[in-house]
Length: 152
Image 1 (cartoon, one colour):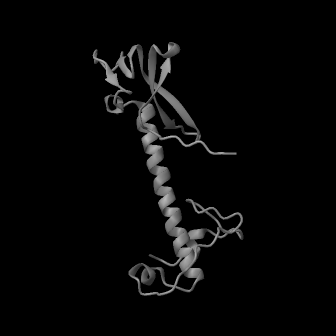
Image 2 (cartoon, one colour):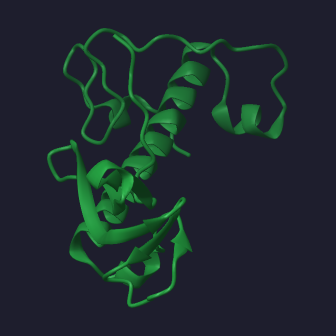
Image 3 (cartoon, one colour):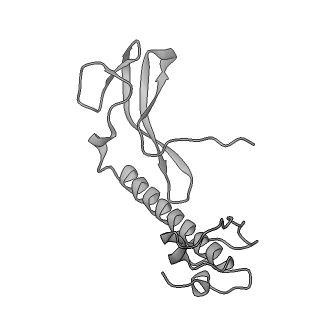
């Protein structure tokens, strides 16, 4: 099965009414982890790929969708941006945790590796079965991951 990639929290548009109109939307990360399509403007007039958007307050024809920034305080956009930032932070933390686990498994001090003091490659190992590297993670034997890590 192939994955579908979408850009979260960025304006997009689609043609409506056999191409005579359009809808402006963005993909938002919902609280259940799914991706929702949020419509924020509609156009019933289209000329080539230029649209006259109804909610943007602009009566001229614009190329593509209107800016999301006029809706920057809208709850779906604010919440989605907050969830994306939290997911990015969790991913960074997971990468840092994995690097510390790899360094510890290889017998290297992660602080020395970061400074370039350790020479030689340390490969990235696959996560152990049942080991997730997100907040509150536990090893397969049930010990908290953070308790097994050397300090920063």
